[in-house]
Image (cartoon, rainbow, N blue to C red; front, side, top):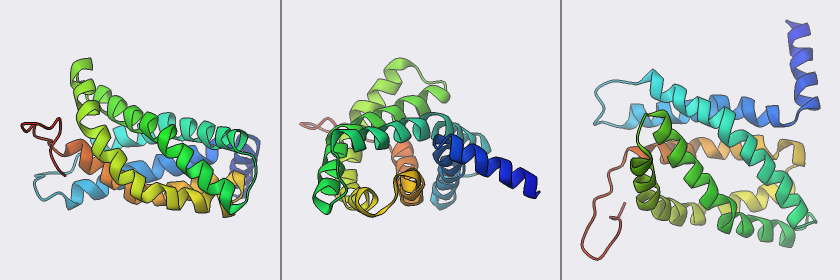
Length: 187
C-alpha cells in the first residue's frame, strides 16, 4: 500500500495536472449525485449520469482548467491582492464563458443529443449561469490566485466547485421556457 501511495505521489509531482484530474474525477460525479438526490422530481438515481459527469470533470474540465490557471499566471504576473483580483475578473470574461460552453456541449453530447440541441442549451443556459457565476467566482478566485500555491490551485477550486457543480447539474436539468421578449426565462 505504501508503495502505491509513493508511486501516486511521484506521478502527481511529475504531472501536476493529475492533481486536478483526481480531484474532479471525484467531485464532479459527487456533485451530480448530490443534485440527483436533492431533486424531488426524480424517481430514481442514475449512475450513468454521475459517470458522465465524472468523465467530463476528470478528462475534459480538469486539464482545461489546469491550462487556464497556468495561463492566468502568464497573463498577469504577480501575486499581490491587486494581481489576484485582476486575474479573477479576467477569468470571468475569458475562461468562464468557455468553461460553461464546454460543460453544456460535452454533457449533452455524452447524453447523445444532437448538435442543434446542444447549441440550444448553450444559448439558453450560459447567460444565466454566467450571471450567477460572476457573483461567486471572483471572490473564490481572488483568494485562489492570492493565497494558494500554484500546485494546489486546481484542487482548491475543486472543493468550491463541488457546490458550483451541483448548481451546474441543476442548470443542466432545469427547463428554461421561452417567453415573449426574452430568450430565456428566469431561474
